[in-house]
Length: 166
Ligand SMILES: [Zn+2]
Image (cartoon, rainbow, N blue to C red; front, side, top):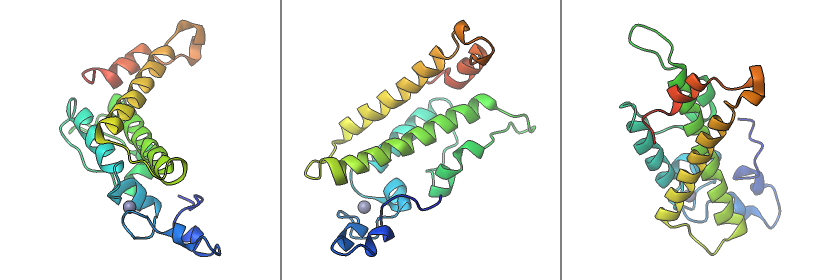
């Protein structure tokens, strides 16, 4: 949102590192939008396909997230046709979009910085994504524990969020 990541245009001003401003795979400026929604490297497409399949187990409407939707995912409010709020849907959407985007970023950093000679396989990406989402479910379950008292997540909320997704 604040252009704080050292990607794309950031490198254009750094002598001898100008080449880092471009996505090595696509040859275009490597903006956050490119990384999260456009890059042809194995990563974003596989993750968003997995997110879509997951979402469509429970809900039928899905739009491939734009950068704006990713950045604003916590503000999206789903409603019934009569205008009733659906907090369980909003919660699942927030988790799904934010965790998927974060995984795409991590995959990109592994690909560009940590292991520049390796490419993630599609099954490996889907496995990583499944593990990320399963960890979020475990976290939500753990947060319902009575030892958290008033801070505990209501069980009802966790059920509303995750039912029919397993
Ligand atoms: Zn690219």
